Length: 357
Image (cartoon, rainbow, N blue to C red):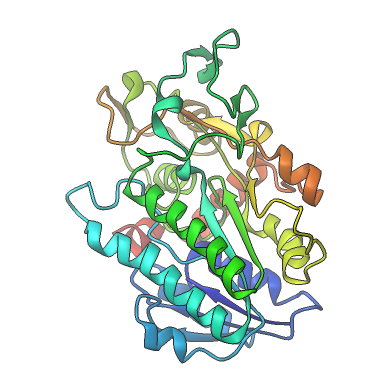
């Protein structure tokens, strides 16, 4: 099978490409990247050495997408991933929408023309913010945990957020671009008859992830400890109790094989599914700090008791449906992910300077 990966020189795209290159069912891999993110150029040479074709192009440009070679399947890993994009005073809301939504439209037109399958890597941030922000929390072992005896919004439980939970605004401009992309992908699939899967992914992390908090807080935190950079707990009392789950991108490979080979090409199977580390692979910033202090020297951490737009105290995706439908579970534990990042940081001591601007 011939596969194209968008955002192929980003952390997720490059990780998937390297893993797929060893899969016997893959005949060739190509990808497109605009190299707009610091650190992405660093991934180009290792990919080309594996025989992977890397095109310097922009999915926002229809002619760039149209010029890609014909493939059987597109895996969309290209996105501006920051929930603060367009509202932080540093980035453009128009560029965010053009990249995350217009880019998806161009890819769907490509899939329509070639009858290629499409796997969209979506996000946990498509879920409605108010219900999550208003959950009653208690602190257990330096981490927020939902109070069990509260009236949870439909689709949320102590196990996390399921696919049944609302995607109504507000979800952030970023989240809106992703949920709109989901709807368009499913409409194109229904109208033009090519297969589409929507994979809502929790936070992903691993060695080589770009050292910017918008790219992934776990990698940023560990690299900051390794490079002895000061850090801040932002919002929610400034104590670092906010919690996220975490998974490694390579744990998606078994899923992508099933999707690309259409082993589950049954219309009764849900097209949208959560894939995440789940509650078993979740951690607060304070707990991550304890881990880093045991691995490296301590750094200065301040507390800022001021919430930012779209911040939420606790986000764990419930991957129960994926386990039932796809027999999928994360294979890499959060301690293993943290150690992988730490080992990489020890060999790339200036990674924040390379990739964080």
